[in-house]
Length: 360
Image (cartoon, rainbow, N blue to C red; front, side):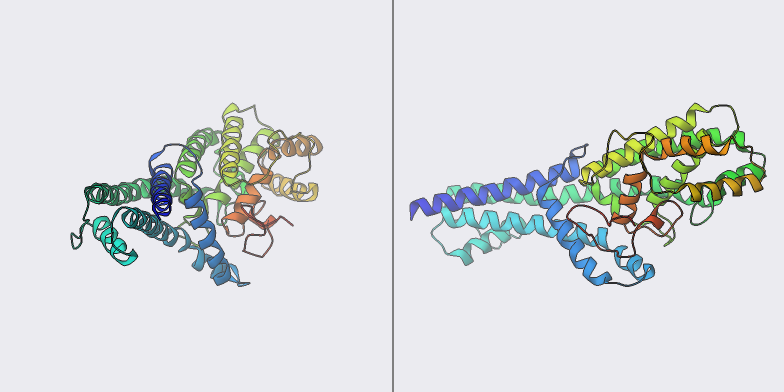
């Protein structure tokens, strides 16, 4: 019986330490490190939300998925508390003379700092103090975590909302370039590339440090950080490949910042992609679709380079972010937008563990 109690104590201590470690990796550690407990909670909750969505249309999917990240964060906190409570109950049972019911009562009283029950031994008293400290620590982490989370969300959505003014709704790279040309502002795209390069760097850092941000949806159903990123990257790729204007390094740096950010977020979620693609590798956009966009730009009077070479150059830029963009659009159930989420199937559930709906 002594060996059983020792084993139960060790298991309880391991559960508590694993939970605290998960909370620290999820909330405190400023880098993208996967926490198994947090990942399990998000995957389990996602499965339930997928059942809720069923085979409904996008409007239904958007309403359901708007609650996914907030609800899962609350569930995650409850899971942390429950595991800590159970782990300490196991340690109380192993060190006290009472039964499991009394052990859970002492554990709950200590975790919630109720003071309605106390341990009988000195070891149990030490456990009570440490459990109360862990309970306060988890509460403090939550209180400090939410303001940081929503501050990062606000920074992300500010530029996403402004993009509608420049690129329409849903955002389109062709529409963006056409609008800038109509107001004689193609030379003013320079500032846009710089701002979005900074945006990509911020999104990369926040969406791997706070992975739940990936699933926080925009205030408007037809907006999404993923499709906004795709529209800006496509516009920069068109600027670098198709527009008959002097070379603009800022556009090319914006593309690099964008595909690095999307790739690192995809890596965090174990989404497969080729990290060394060749310029001649196939992309999800056909040459016919590019030709249609080329003709629209030509009709708008935008100065363009030779069509065939422009297509080759555009495909060479697009291949760097094509796969991860479409995967993340499906993974986050993004609204339909040209050249990004419109490449994803109509099934809004995950098709494989840790991945995203397969592209058509």
